[in-house]
Image (tube, rainbow, N blue to C red; front, side):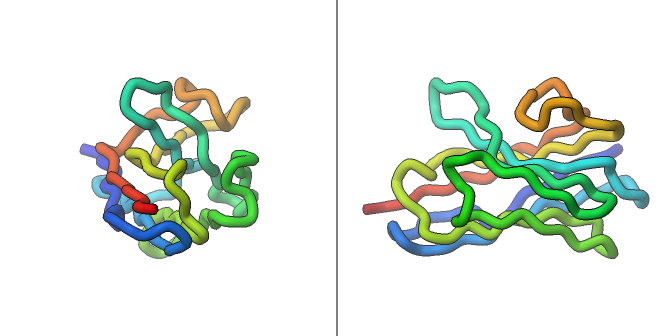
Length: 125
């Protein structure tokens, strides 16, 4: 059974940093693409960043450009999200997602085949 397992969330002060990880279990070959989304209580899931596994092409939401960096470890089939200069608006549950095939719209939830359970990030002022 394929699973995406996020880790690295927690409580951080404004201006601080966190690195999230998303490990794939139950699968030995790479995804076509992986992404990070986030969701605040009562809101829709929001696109944060994505990476096409082959070539490492990246995409970011405007709200995180210059602060967040998405990366991967091919050998471990693991995705990362380095988050710097965090502010209270970044407080959310963060989810990783994975796609088996080509993605037409990186921010569209239905483009992704698998989702993790989420990891909570809380930024205190």
